[in-house]
Image (cartoon, rainbow, N blue to C red):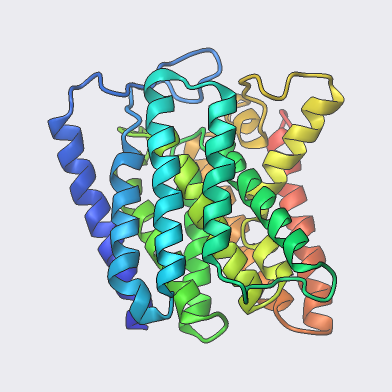
Length: 331
């Protein structure tokens, strides 16, 4: 249990302290988030979250990771990949980098991170040859990085949408359902987000910014990959299912409408709910409640037989119902 609680607390405390220092030291207009017609916030806030929580999480993992079973190759690759996205995200927050540079940095970071998993890491050895699986994992991680960035558009959304599933994954590890190293990784990320929540609660003083959301996508994706290895692929998919379902359904709907999917928009289900009258707390608490249901479904899907047969469809139905509620403007 200490291997789970210690990294969580370390990352949480470090995030709070670093954010408090950064907010006080940096100029008031540094990385200010502009309010536009697409914004889901009306208050002034600064994109400083990533500057604090990313170093806090990496430090926590280096302090506790080796002892919990994460090997040096994984930690080194994870740190390098995360820093690539941290720097790229910061530069994008400051200067709005071209999409090509963002994509190349994400592919590079994902390739480094997947390399860090080591040659013995497999999810579908019976179905896919090694190099094909590796390539698909890189693409899946790039997708998760982007969908995390897409879903970071409301106060506490990443905290509720990823922090809760990661905290649940850490709990799984504490009770022997996943490896201790997996739990340590999940606990560090969840701790960093918990510290960030102190300043991101409505009305938010700070946002993650790309320097936060891009690394959070990579680190969280790795945690869910490890969960899939330790338990089942279905568990790794169910825990972050709300983020996957909202981002993917929105992408498909925009493609069907012939829209430019690279253009900025505000058409995610949670954004529609906010604009149709839901409060921020109603949205994020609904997502949090769904994630508790998905956590139970993830445990069931880690089993064989009837529990898996029940857990998987219940997870899909629960996520679909919430998306429908969010998109129903008369709800």
